[in-house]
Length: 76
Image (cartoon, rainbow, N blue to C red; front, side):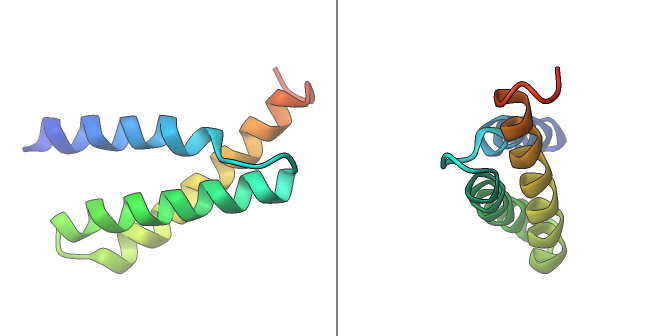
């Protein structure tokens, strides 16, 4: 069960990292929303939906922002 959860988290991080949209804000928000949904699902497996959603939203928003900055050539 632990390996399945870990592989699911890693796959969702790859998906949420890209985000949707053309601007920094839209990419960060869409990736944050996807991260919140994924985190909520994973958190519900451990009995704490709220914490999972909050962590997922944070990770998704940061990864969407970093992806946007990388795509614009601001970071390597």
